[in-house]
Length: 130
Image (cartoon, rainbow, N blue to C red; front, side):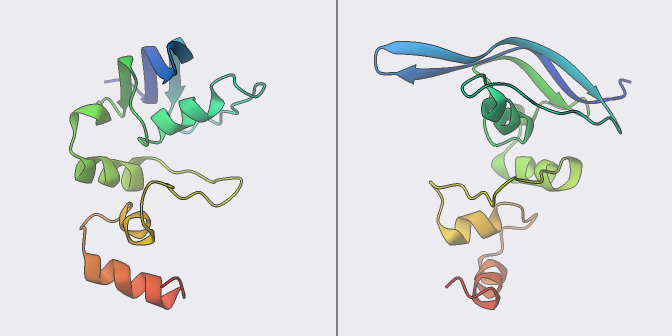
C-alpha cells in the first residue's frame, strides 16, 4: 500500500472560455507523502487554485486520476466526498472561503457527515448569519 496521501496521475483540468479551451492543469503528476509539508507557488494563472480545488475535493479533473489515501473521490457520492474532505484532508485558507454558488445553509452543511438541515440552521443562528 502506498504511503502517499495525495496522488495526481496525469491530471488535466480544462475550462471552456467562450470558444477556447484553457488547460489549468496539464498532465500533472505529483505524489505527496503522509506528514509532508508542501508549498504551492507560482504566478497568477498558473493553476494553483485549480490544483487546490481538485486536492480539496471541491472540483474534479477533466481527465487523469486523483487519489486521496488510495481512493478516487470522483467515484463517490457528494456525501462521501464531504466525509473525505472532513476526515482525510484539511485546508487553512488565506481568506475565509465560501462556495459562492451555494447558499449559507449549503455552505454550513458542506462539511457535515450527516446532512442535517436543522443542525445547520442552528449553527447559522448561533453565528448570527441568518
